[in-house]
Length: 371
Image (cartoon, rainbow, N blue to C red; front, side, top):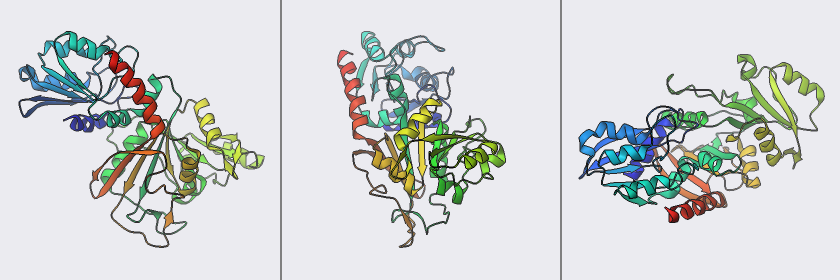
């Protein structure tokens, strides 16, 4: 039931920000009598939506919710008050809410009201669901998510210089939700030139789609042509280059609508650390990296990443296919595998960087002990 609450939470992935994504399930006996998720800031929280469906059946029931219920008044009343009024017997929470106004207060309030609270089921999965939210509320820096789509034999494309669709519709829709939850999407110069990607959220419904993320190209020598799709569409985008790029190319791309920023060089390309610092200075703190192979490998080597979503199809691309540097098509070094599941005919495996997860969980458990 906690896993079902987590699945429901993803329905708000594109719309809930700056709030966390949350899902809730009410179970009476062995029957699900109510479900809900938080759609957007200012609207009812997941718990209250699930209770509205359950109605009187919530009395004596168990609520499974993907994040600690709030205990403060914001744009909506405290959820703990509504849970107590509904007569729930038990609440199951995978992880605390790191917001300073909550952070254990919700659990304490429920217990004080005589509600049994079980804490910690699927804790790591819950943290990954709201990873950027956790890092921001705990006062840490940006969050970097790597997204990779590969064939069954671990290839990005059938051959160099070719664009191939790797995964199906369900995986693509989730990728567009991920984009909506991030400030920017990073690709390399080769991907930008060959694929001419939009890097938008067009597969989402109109009511679900908000602002598209900012496209970012790592292009040390500024090979990106001025007639790229973002320039043609008049859409703002960022190009990060090194000091070796010519001033003429900088001016040409700026005339085409790009924001060009010079960064320190590293191993002949743009330094990943410098690139992330430049993006953060622009207010782009939630970073999604979509490749290609060279950029993905650079982020893995830099160790400056927090989460890794690997989408894999059943189709094989063969020996001429383009591979990811290192072991990126599998489990990168320092990664903790969180879960795996089917998305249509594809598979999604999710990882979190071990150091990121350990730092967050240690803070949560310290607060949980106090709760």
